[in-house]
Structures are given as structure tokens and as C-alpha cells.
Amino acid sequence: MLRHTPEGATIRCIPISGSGLYREAMSGYPSLLTLTTECSRSFRRFAAVLVETYPERVRLDEIVARWNDHYCGEFADLDRMMMCETGAGRRPSDRFLAISVSHHNLHRLIEVLELEIGAAPLSASQVPERITDLREIVARLDELLQTSALSPTSTESRHA
Image (tube, rainbow, N blue to C red; front, top):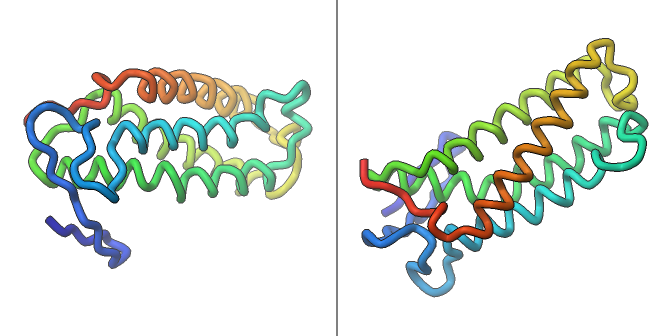
């Protein structure tokens, strides 16, 4: 099955029969579990900058660069796979919905910070709650990705 994204890209969706999304459907295509593991590793590379001793000294442009690598790379691959599954009449698990929504919400928070402080250090924010939210969302999303990457049953989808 082929799907077309709003950007005009064509995605080949891999139908996976009833037992779960984490199985390899065809050689040459990554499984959902593989994509989740890669997404988790990529997110960890992004998050590493925020767990430094003084994260408030980190410049937002460094965070944005790392975020864009992850968000437009491994996460986009995982999100596309989930869109394909949804388009194939399957309902993604609550865990994957949480991963997707959390990524998109974090993306919006980073955009808001970018508008507020540009490339300055996080400490330049006039709304310290945004920095607290950023660190908290990153920590919780990291936990969610780790458990999803370690648990094949968490990658199963239920029929709608």
C-alpha cells in the first residue's frame, strides 16, 4: 500500500498480519521495534545535552540542532510507520500515541523557546517554567522510549 504525505512524499506501508507490529514484514524494511530502538538511541543523543551539570548554560541553537536531527530523522521514520499502520485500519497502542504526541508537544515547546530567546542559553528565558517543562518532558519521554524499545509487546497494535 502506498500513502502520500501532505509534503508530497510517497511512503510504502508494510502490512503486517495480526500477531504484532514488531515482526519484520519484508527484508529490507525495518520493523517497528527496530525503529523504536533507533528512535530511543537518537533521543538519548539529543537529551544528553540537557543532563549536563549546568543545562541552563546550554545554548538553544545547540539544542535545536540536536532536536532537528532526531525529530526529522529517527522519530519521523517511526511516526511515518505508525501513520501507515493507522492508514491500514489498525489502531496504534496507547504507548505509541503517547510517544508521538509527546514528541510533537516537545517540538512546539522548543519552537516557543526559539521565538523567546533565539540562540541564547536557556538561562535567558524570562519564563523559567518553560525550562523546567523542557527538562521534565525530556526525562519522561526518555523513560517512555526506553521501555518501548525494550518491550516488544509494547509495540503491538490493536485492531480498531
